[in-house]
Image (tube, rainbow, N blue to C red; front, side, top):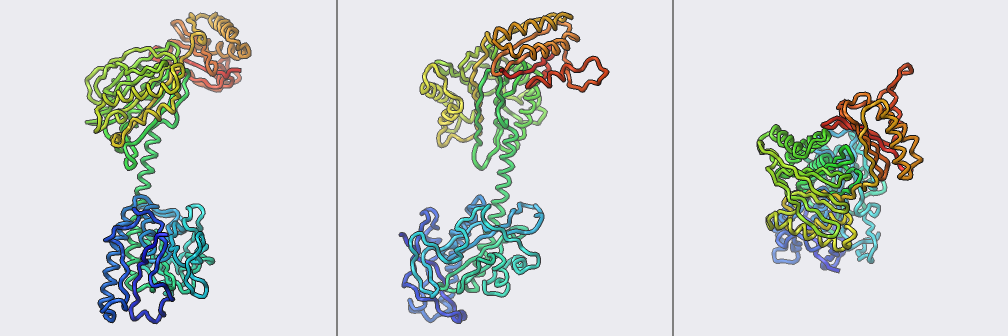
Length: 640
């Protein structure tokens, strides 16, 4: 096993009363199982100083003290640099443990407050410390007689054997600090103390617990960890009896290590809170889960620009529309910061509101452009808005400066759709154009942001061509008659990213067009007359008989009669009745009255007002949507 010399400091004359160290080999060697990258650079390692009997100046105590002081300075410099490299909490604590064992101590125990206060937070409740991590020297052990020996492989040292090597946050015990107790007094004093001092003798049992006392003969230093505003933990450094005892100057070393560690823990806690806020913000801005509209399958991906910048201005959305249609949206606000994410959230909310009004795609982009100008100057964004109709197997797309979508056909051919690019949102004073295209069953539409196809290593059109080729290559794996599953397709598409291609956020939305077959659709225009409700019941009964859904006849006739009666009462133009058979039976009744019906509790003496109550009780789902030409009231029933 690889070995390394243990850093030790010779005792000074005034500490010789503690007794000479136990007999030990001429050269102490310990197993060193850490990765090479974990070892500090050669010039920053602490070298074991020459012993008094090794050199001509053996009797010069002042020279030896100066040499030891230089070693301490080099050790503190290397250790603090390593602690400062930590970004999160675990890296900071690990840096302290790895830099002090075995150079400064044989065992270290690091305790942190639980919960850990962040920034200006004022902790509520009693102060509790949790053992966060331990590290120990696994080179030599000693029996009760003091004989030093090498333990067998896998054996445990008797040194604090009741403490787990790397305790988890949930398994480690909590130590509640008693107000005015000895441990509270030591932590309030902030300065490290020797383990044999009266304060530490009373405080260590409270910290370690009754079953975890410092073994006899071991030397200890108890160092409070004080952050910017408060004590956030404590560190215990232990040395075996066969090493030199801690000196007064070692208290200064422990103080430096504790200060840098506490500041690093504060920094890591603040960074963790910011990362948590960023993650929560991004999750709130993007859809929690995609809807499951009729006739289309959906899948999505979002990748931030970097782990350190987890928010950005890219977004995607899928919004169900009246008539079983669905709006597919993808957009990109300039930049990938908190400001970009906030602007993105406002634009996404505006898009959902406009989609609810059932406006044409070009009108939606026009209103988004006006909203971006109201948000301030230089609020630029690109957006692509498409509306898919599964009954007509068509879609309408409008573009505002966004990269064009790619459609993968059922036979495996991928094409870049020709859509007028338009100007980005926020420019102002421009018109947007919409085009209507076929959306055949089995085809896959891929919407994406420019972070997927553009980087410093390639231009956008090269990236789009690579994306098209990747989709065709993935389609060949499943054959010409079987389109690739959406989730694996999204993963394969992301493989076109090279090592240096993550310059921007990436949002991806894939839609598989299944459509609704004409044989599963029944559609009628009905004049608003008194006999229309009966006519609607007969038409619905015939359609259910044709589909073999006679079990639903009574419920459908009752609900259709109530909804059609409400439409006939106020409509001036012909009303529409449509039945759709998919994973459920959907009925839609449209009229030219914009006022939406509302559910209310009818009184005993009322002659009406119970129609929607019956719909609400019998249908699995129902709703009403305002259109530019009126409204649509719909309900769904599960298939038998």
